[in-house]
Amino acid sequence: MINVLPGRKKTIREIDVRGKRVLVRADFNVPLDEDGAIADDTRIRASLPTIRYLCERDARVILCSHLDRPPGEVVERLRLALVANQLSVLLDRPVLALQDCIGPEVESTVAGMSGGEIVLLENLRFHPEERADDPAFAESLARLAEIYVNDAFGASHRAHASIVGVPERLPAVAGFLLEKEVNTFAGILQDPERPFAAVIGGAKVSDKLEVLENIVSRVDLLLIGGGMAATFLASRGYGTGASHVETDRLDAVRRLEAKAKDLGVRLLLPRDVVIAKRLETGVPFRVAAATDIPDGQIIADIGPGTADEFCRELAGSKTVIWNGPMGVFEIPEFAEGTRRIAAALANLRGTTVVGGGSTADAVTRFGLAEDLTHVSTGGGAALTMLAGKPLPGVEALDDAEAP
Ligand code: ADP
Ligand code: MG
Image (cartoon, rainbow, N blue to C red; front, side, top):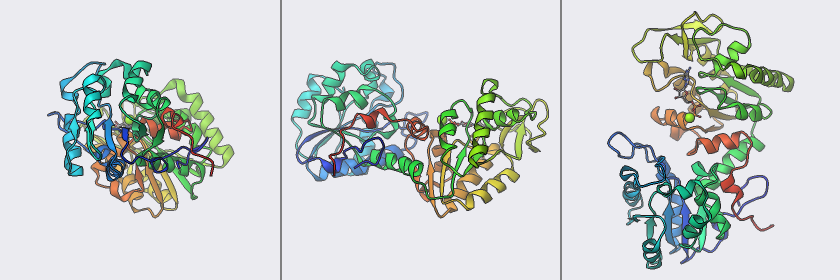
């Protein structure tokens, strides 16, 4: 059972899949490099437990996913054949890539499958009907199978046809990855081992306000870094140089600080920052007090004093959620703050969870992903859960039977 409120949802364990045609909505939206090759196959590997489970039970496994953002038509370099190849290597068995995701040819191929076979439908977003949650399109997908499994956590915040339309039409359950993701976030939000700390960074406070507003009432400690620290510093009346301040969010930030104070939550801003004239590699940079940022200078990272303080604070935590890098980690000069936090979490004896596309990318680049409890495969979906909002893809699944 999937441990999410409101209502518990059925998982793949609670349905008889033996010999059945099972449509699995996976999240194979992998990053591609300039040559069009898969740059990181984490999301493909994360889908393996569900696929293996189905194969072991002689199910006919029909996989589907989107890749990137094709404009509702075929884009040759976004065909899923490259994912099928990689899956086939990882599973050590054939995975047949189909040329489309719906239609008579797909139907006849699927009708001819034997137990344990795997096919991968073509990129769902080659059809504009996927994003539109078009009923006829959902019906065409549903017609291919007897059971629907959602294992696409990273797409479950979207009300698209393969996420919410298909489960209206078939018995619909959660796969192992979806279950693990949802239970991890639900678990730390509902019943964290304390002290519970959140580290929130990233470019803009406006992207994270809902998360901050939800999380402030659940954590004991809130550490703020990244570009959005500028708006917090400005809201306290400090000069922030040429850093981007979201002036339309100053009130919201002040309200958040007041709420933290009311609740007895310690909210820490950077005490020192790395500053530069431009966010580019090779530019001169230096450390400055966060209260004393000169004109024309931009906050690029938290400073070493802040990193020391944040790491010391985190060392006492039993649960940490981290969303948003501490600086512009893509530029080596400004990666140190993010690296220090990643290392602190990797060394922590407690539950450490990373949610957010860039943050996951950072910990993977530092080679520390394996040392954390959970690195989410979903960016937007993780933020949705951290904001305390339901995921349409989870809501659409069948309710578990009462125990
Ligand atoms: P996530 O994807 O993990 O949720 P965000 O999308 O909120 O994170 O933010 C990621 C981006 O924030 C990164 O590209 C990073 O370069 C940027 N960023 C971090 N610190 C700063 C800063 N001080 N100024 C500008 N951008 C920043
Ligand atoms: Mg992001």
